Image (cartoon, rainbow, N blue to C red; front, top):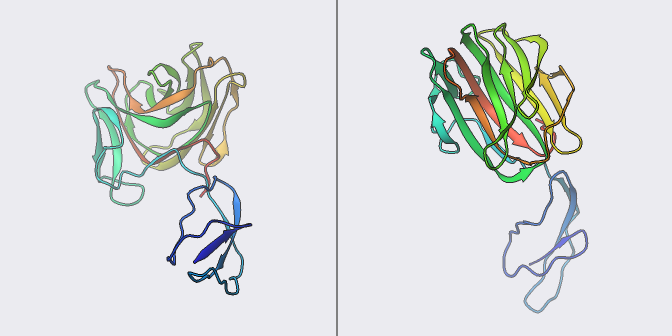
Amino acid sequence: MCWAMEHFLPRSGETTTYTDITVQPNTTYDYRVVPCDRAGNTSVSSGRVTITTRSFVLFANDFESGTLGDWSGVSGLTLTTSSPDSGSYATQALSVSGTTASAIATLPSSADKLFIRVRLFGASQGANTVHLLKVRTSTGRSLGEVYLSSTGRLGYRNDITGQSTTTTPAVTPERWHTLEVHIVVGTSRLVEPSFDGAPIATINGNLGTSLIGRFQLGQNSTGRTFDVRFNEFIVDAQPITG
């Protein structure tokens, strides 16, 4: 059988299936099928089928595997079946005695721009700030972090300049929220957090020129108490939809 994509693809042999591994994200493709025999005689082609690819997610984890196998450096971060957002599991960052509760994930390739989305549930918090997520270079250097302030508000700290910005929205305890962050390093140097679908800040500042290669979930500093849960964690180089 012969296959055509927009113009023509090489013969695929005696088969009734074809997988196109050359497609790009967020791109529309037209396909049609031309049956042919071993002698090369062709029949009437099929109708044209149009397909638009979605964004290819760099990293995604809904924790429904029941493990933290996609993460490294796991310290105090565990899975829980208590109050999951959806499915059976969420991951829990819990500290009642000031211990750490975090994990690291590595991107398949470093990037100068990322879109991050995670579902967030604040069960309890001591009179202290709590790191929710950090972006790091491929060597582990922290570029910036989103945190929960001691008053329960979202904030962002630029770890290159040491400047912190606390935003207006308060995270309602015992309720799932959606946290999104658009971060750009290099000459643009932009951080745009959103909360429950609404933009809450546009923060400009020096983030250096090193690309983002890792990200962290949870709190990696000691001496703080908290119980925060996460679910449906997604990182991509394109805006996240769906």
